[in-house]
Image (cartoon, rainbow, N blue to C red; front, side, top):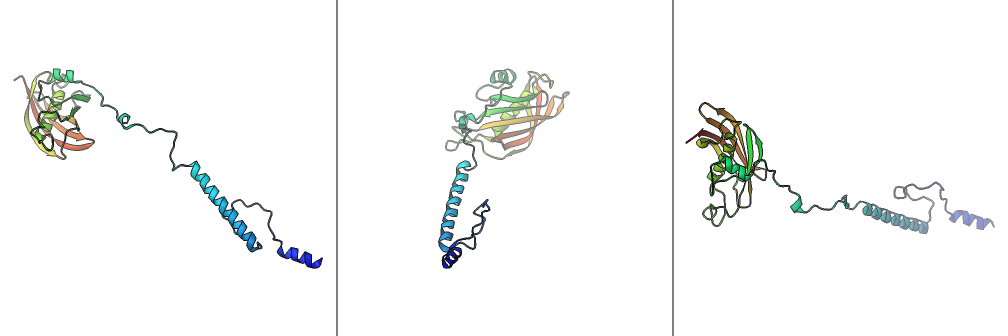
Length: 226
């Protein structure tokens, strides 16, 4: 009886009844036998694997699967229309093939205007500039920007109203990047100084494609009946 009790006390593990809150962080009890230690390690490994897979399933790469992807054709809104092509034709004297403004998207009377020119492969200058690489001529970018300036100058708020306008000078013109077929040229012209007595206006112009400046310069223009 004594030997049996001694053997039971020798081989029986002393296991604490205190609950283990996180088995992965608690060391093995020192009194565990070799076989019990292996069994405990296997159960601990099984818990870690199941716990890891549970976390992975709950957070799939940190994305919210409830929000569907928006098709690319619906991601970009159209430019607003402040002055359409018919109104532009009523203000500017230019006609095909030299009307280079398609739409005004912002207009501040007597201050500035922002307009767009849709550059397409059907533009009449592309067969010659250049057949193998369709690039919009820089002089035509300047002309298009000047036409936007004319939309500012020829409005009643500025004092011009329906008169012809002419180039009086251009300065500090720089071409930053080529404009090719398929681009949308966005042009901003801002009135800096106006001398109504002499009909002279100084304007600052910048043209963009995709937010990048492609052309900029200072424009000096004059109004007159002829």
